[in-house]
Amino acid sequence: MATKALVDVRGTAIAVVDGNAMTAHLEVALRGHGIRCVGLHSAPRLSGRWADPTAYSAELGHQRTLDAAVAALAELRVGRVLAGGDSGVALADVLNDRLGLPGNDPARTAARRDKAAMAAQLHAAGLAAPATAQVGSPDEAADWYSACGHPRVVVKPVASSGTDHVRVCANAGDVREAVEQVLGAENFFGEANSAALVQEFLSGDEFMVNTVAVDGVHKVSDVWSSRKTAGPGGVPLYDYQQPVPRAGADVVVDYVKDAVAALGVVTGAAHSEVMLTARGPVLIETAPRLMGGFQPAEVERCCGTSHVELLARSLVDPAAFDAFEERDVRWRQQLRNVWLINPRAGVCRSRWPEAFAALPAHRGVTARFGPGDPAPRTVDARSSPGYVWLAARTEAELDRDLAAVRALEAGDLYVTGRAPDEGEAASADRGQHQRAQALGVRTVRS
Image (cartoon, rainbow, N blue to C red):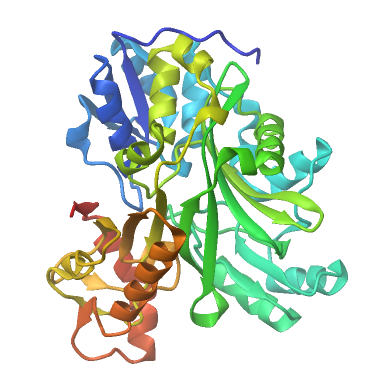
């Protein structure tokens, strides 16, 4: 499919497939330009946190056929279809193609969703990628591990999000057990895992790079370093992320631009996670959508732009996108997004976000669980209670408040009631987050 010229979307509508909290921020940014947002679902039932349907001027839900979806969007004069969450990528690609709108080639969607296909595409393009095997059984995974020559590997679903069922393994027995758990579960989007991924463990410094493309020209809105900590059972948990000056990340940014181009991203947002290893940058994964879990207004306050702002700019003002100089972005303050970690399952306390308000660097809290909700023990990204935003002049001030956050968490900050036994905790970790996620996102500002 040839790349289509950019269309002027002003006065039309943008459709968002499987919108989430971040696309709700995009809707706000576009509203000021007179652009309506239309919600659309990729499946009759969706798992995870999705944007409030009242955020859109029209909510179409799930259309029973592709032809029905095309007709409904054409009637609403939709000028672009975007993926909100990862589950919306495939349908967004097909709808843009059917409607004759700028988009990414649906024939190459698998390389942007399936992590095994993603690694294979990067290898084919001559770019570094992790050694990868897609397996259908625990024995197949254990055999690959024994032959691969890598002392540590990562087991994960083929297509999911966050740290869902991600496990670092250092022997064949652990690999077999981790693959059994993946194959016996649903992914973040409520889909049964028919296969699992085994990849070499990448050691180094982890970065997140946010890009927006117009007609194959990729520009970077922001770059973040990402720190993780060990969670229950060896699962890596996010500790925090903080921005990195663009000028100090050239080798990572250059690699990411080549990688997203190789994966067929020619238009729209992409969020890439990459490890800077001893052999250079290696892609962990790319998602052709906005980065999740962040507060665009806070990012814009500190540097003047954000992933949301740059995507909106590309849609409503192509000339301004062309004029955007990514190297001119300067961070006026140190910013840190701290992931919250709940050490045990229970019933959520009331007003726990207020415990962070006294921190000198506090800028706000995004809370996933409210009073009386079931609060799972944090075992992955989706079972985190939320985030605390910190901003200060120096990194030392951020380190001080990060230590204070972890000290507060050690004192049963989030939950009341007796500690559940092992079986109850496992049940909460697997299932209670689904009910809590349906509540959406609450933000408390200082």
